[in-house]
Amino acid sequence: MKIGIRLTIALAVPVAALVALFGLLQERANRVRFQAEMLREGRTIARTVQLALQYALRDSQLQDVQQLADEITGYERVLGLRLLHPDGSPRYESASLRKYPAVPPRTLAEVLRTHRMAEIHLRFDRGPVVAYVVPLFGPSGSVLGVAEVLQLESFIEDEIRASRKEIAALSAVMIAAVAAILFLITRVGVERPIEELVRSFREVGKGEPSSPLTVHRGDEFGRLAEAYNAMCARLDETRKSLLAEQEERRRMEASLREAERMASIGRFAAGLAHEIGTPLNVISGRAEALLRKGGVGEPGERHLRVITMQIERIARIVRGMLDFARPRELCLVSTAPHEMLSKVLELMEPRFEQAGIRLETRVPAELPRIAADGDQLHEVFLNLATNAADAMPGGGVLGVTAERVERRRPEGGGESLPFLAVTFEDSGCGIRPEHVGRVFDPFFTTKEVGHGTGLGLSVSYAIVREHGGWIEVESEVGRGTRATVFIPLRPERVAPASPAAAPIS
Ligand SMILES: Nc1ncnc2c1ncn2[C@@H]1O[C@H](COP(=O)(O)OP(=O)(O)O)[C@@H](O)[C@H]1O
Ligand SMILES: [Mg+2]
Image 1: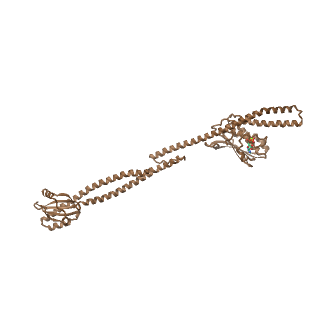
Image 2: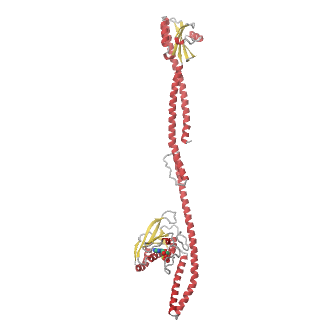
Image 3: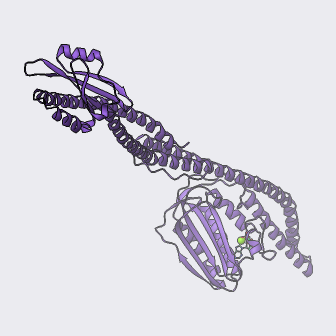
């Protein structure tokens, strides 16, 4: 059963009982009042009758007595009038009294003795009746007879019935009003806030973020809503921090797996480089010795030169592998991005000029400084510039921009943080969609044999990650490539040095 209905019943029942009690008391008081009124009236009538009859009897006007008896019958519920001799024998009685017995002898004797009015309550077939018995005196004070006035008592019952009806109607209206008011109060003051609370509980139970309850009351519900809102806020916070923790753990696990993978590639590369390095030195030493000695003849000398050139190539690759595998120690120094980029571009200038590449730089001098290992970041930018130049052998445009941006880390989770974004955008050949995901893989290259080691971007990525940032590459075949390096402006955590790291795929 609804709380509103229950409360209404719980309060309406005692109210109804109270109203009923009030009605009962009222009825009792009314009965007493009506009775007193009736007796007063009856006595007055009896007294008047007494005087009138005394005069009539003195003048022996029995005619007048009969007239009075007939006129008085029916007036104010008077049932009738009876005149008796002092010995109790009837002298005259109204026609209405004929079937009713006369006053009992005891009462008659009492009236004759005391000379005073007597009242007796009788019960006739028409209901309760009061008989007023008065003595009638002659001029000398002698008793001439006795008069009996009978008055119907039943009208009291009629009056009481009418007033009872009135009280019942009034009580019904009162109870209905009280119930309606209670119902409204409980509906607005109790049920609504509870329904709102329940709705919010359900939402929270389903795991939805709860909308706060509106608190605009100072009562218990207001306090309940306040406490509930505070609880929901704490719940939301806990949920958020739990999600963030989960995300952080997922990120850590992924980067750990990646670091392990790269570490094993690094160890493999280092071992391989070492194993190749020693025999390579021997071969190159022997070839150079033969060349120095001379007398090998023209075709032989040419072959020896090819051998040394190819060995130089292998040595370059081996150096790259060692570079990739080398554990890096970062030496972070506050660096102005503008100065570092200027140096890189200055170094590349002859190559750009030769290939007919136009440079468009947008690197404001007032950019915030970054915490960077100058040499290593220099290498990153040099790699990006070289790749751009490689992609535009017939010339083109290279846009270099640097700006402050707010970004979330690509691994997801965490809030937006300020980063320095350095972009190299070329109008070169672009990268085929199926290759875009592999450009950071160690030894991935699309360049001709002898032109690329496939280590430039993987080494760059490792360096940038160690600075707490990442690299994004977007490309469209035939239109160009955009590579962006993100370096944190508020480095809160610098990744531990690993042999190399690549983006998590
Ligand atoms: N700006 C660019 N335009 C087109 N392709 C690019 C660009 N940068 C990188 N690539 C692609 O990514 C590959 C890997 O680059 P990188 O790691 O620097 O190795 P490498 O330059 O030795 O090939 C390149 O071989 C090339 O296919
Ligand atoms: Mg390269």
